[in-house]
Picture 1 (cartoon, rainbow, N blue to C red):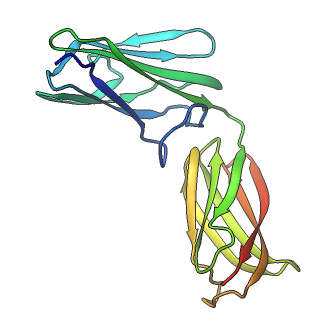
Picture 2 (picture 1 turned 180 degrees about the vertical axis):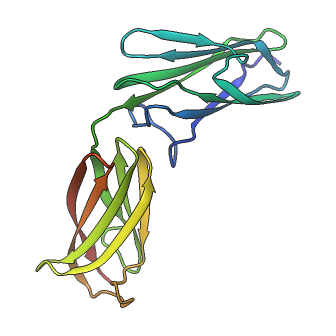
Length: 212
């Protein structure tokens, strides 16, 4: 075995993969999995939390921020609970070496934290839609989200509420029916996505097309 360990970092507060610059809450949780056919030398595992003010917090698997440690002959996994972070761009960096000295391997996940509620990248897919679609959007903070669908003349035909939308990418399905369960007609419609974090409300407006 001459290969480096494989490292995976999963943000548990996100509903999908976190890309560089995505939003996470101020106290995110991460699942870290390190794999190697020769085993992982847990004494070499380094956990670095890098903050925008140039502060760097270095920890190992024995840190009080680490829990749920599980180890097999070829894998080491653990939960890392970040301390509360200030606004800005942060990075979690993991390093590890296998039991025969290959390494260190490294993996870094960067993300944003903000106290200001924002709604970004609002769209629905597919669009045009036939029978169903998914509303997708990115939140800067966990919020309650309400989606309202209107006709072009402003008549409200459907309200969808998601009480547990996360910071980061979110996806909400719609079956293409109005509030009475009727399939809506072909045409162009307006929809709004409103997020409410208890302190601020933000609303974005887009259009969708129904075509069968």
